[in-house]
Image (tube, rainbow, N blue to C red; front, side, top):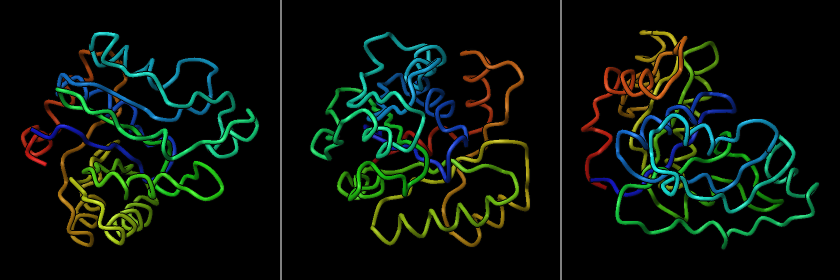
Length: 211
């Protein structure tokens, strides 16, 4: 079974935190978001803790908790913090670990390092979360090219939103990336409705297969 997998998005607000919660719950694993930008309201780790149905100790503390809801590099500067790549080494655990990045691949962590640079060092399989709305073809294909240019393994694409069959087909045909499934927007979002939607929408074996 895949022991470590990275969840990233084509851009901010795609829905990757909800997907990450669903995946962590199905894998009965751990969840880790290395950098949290914005502490007002519910953080992403708190969302996952609420939706994934995991024991509290399975949601690992962030390496950096930054106050402003901005790109991590700027939020860190405002807080007087320097994000160091060395602090973002992923933990080795006995059960699967779902790691969630912040925003898209090119989001800066500091003035020299972006998330994609960290992913290239990790060489862990990545699931790319993509909207099904207008603009997703461009954003998704660019993200796939960026991952492949750095030899980062792409486990596949998880579509999030209403069914857009031709858009999804176009992305898969041009990219050659596996379509793992689709998570619809849920009018009532609870741990149970999320789990049911994940089971219905994804070929679980294709996600939980070997490294």
